Figure 1 (cartoon, rainbow, N blue to C red):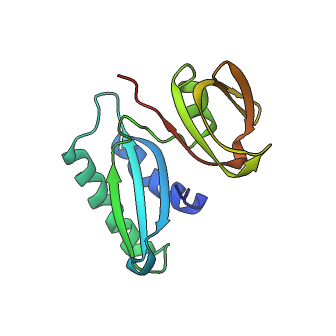
Figure 2 (figure 1 turned 90 degrees about the horizontal axis):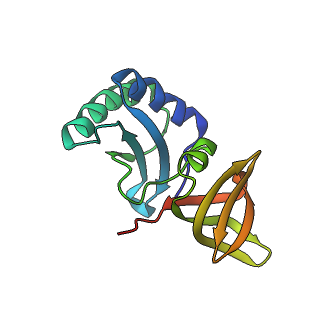
Figure 3 (figure 1 turned 30 degrees about the vertical axis):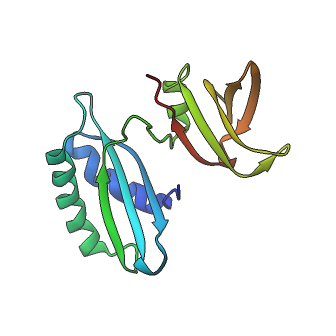
Amino acid sequence: MGRAPERLTNLAARVVEPMGYELVGVELVRRGAAGLLFRVYIDQPEGINLDDCAAVSHQLSGVLDVEDPIGERYLLEVSSPGMDRPLFAPGHFSRFAGHKAKLRLAEPRDGRRNYTGVLRGIEGKMVRIEVEGQMFEVPFDHIESARLVPEF
C-alpha cells in the first residue's frame, strides 16, 4: 500500500465528506510504465455500491482535472474498503480493536516485518497487536500497510 501524501488525502476529503461518505483512506501506487493508481476508499453505514463509487469518481475527477495535484499520468479508482478493510488512521486501530488484522512494517523491527493477530487498539502512537498470545507494540509511523483479516 502506498499511502498518498496528505495533500491528496485532504483533497479527496473535501470532495467525499460533503457527499455524505466516510473517507476511509487514499493510496497512491506506482504501476510501472502504466503510471500511478490513485485509489480512494469510501464507506457509509449502509455500505457502498457501484452508484456510490461512480458518483464520487465523477465529482473527484472534476476537482482533479482542475487542480492537477498529481502532475503525471494516473488512473483514479474509487472503491469500498471491502472485507479486508485497509486501516489508514490511528483511530482505525481503536475502532477495530478485537478484530484480526495483518500489519506490514516499512522496515523490520526486532527481526520482524509482518504481524498477523488480534488488534488491541492504539496507545499514544503505538499500535498494539496480539500474535499467538504475545503482545507487540508497533509504532504507527512504521506501518507500511494494515488490513483486517476476514474471518468466516
